Length: 326
Image (cartoon, rainbow, N blue to C red; front, side, top):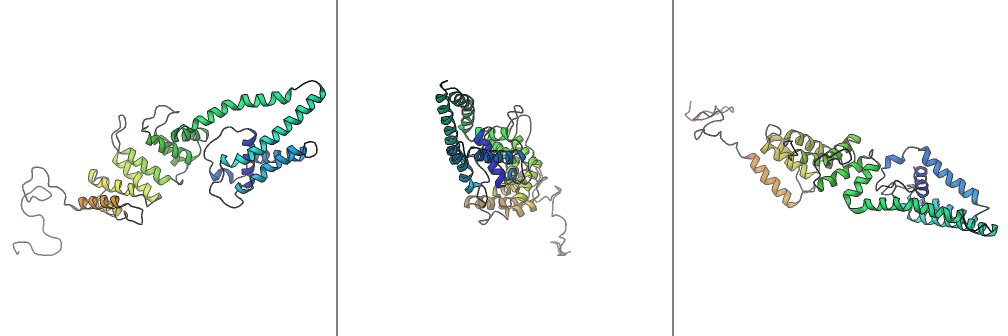
């Protein structure tokens, strides 16, 4: 893993494009030839410059040394992040400056005047300034940041989930085209890429909420919502919102969620599950509603049974006698 991280760092220092806000650990657990070649090229450059350009060689050697604390030789919070390159990039720029200064001195000694030593930095600036503007534009807000991450790395479930989360927060619930997906598109895609990713429970919870909202020509879909809430609780049992919403379906869609399931789900709305006081109060109120007897059919006389007929209901199955003593 350390060699892969070092190779990715060297590649980004040489050509910092494309950039993204998140790199999953899985990208670094298997050997990657391109990244290993980048790390090897950096080492060869250090050795090759050692005699002719000792200053540049020493500065380049400081690049991998400055990465030692973030190579996951000992596990750290993030496997890799572009912010890890702040210090190494300073050494890389100083090394490039030392090489250009040496080239400028050679050009002056030749009497031909400055040429390549000026042309190379001008070309580098011409190429990097537009890329820099493009990269900084992604930081306009959370939605633009994760939209860029999902576009650059569409195979990363975490990026697709966060993009969907912020699309939902922005009210983007309708698919416009392939480049402008809806929140449900991105959340569903994150689960297709990795059904068990870190935020899979939240993705199912959000998809359940979206299924209950009328979208364009689509009516609310309680069955789909219940499926997602159950999947959310299977992935993360402490999701109080999913518990509350699944239980509430027993009132609005009893054919989808029965009372016994709803009561069992509400039993998990506890302090240990992270439920707030207001959530526990709401759960208790919902529990009382579920325990109320079902309403009598419209137009039935008082005391009518479930079939609408008057008089007492069927005999008790417990073996006790009927009211008239027979």
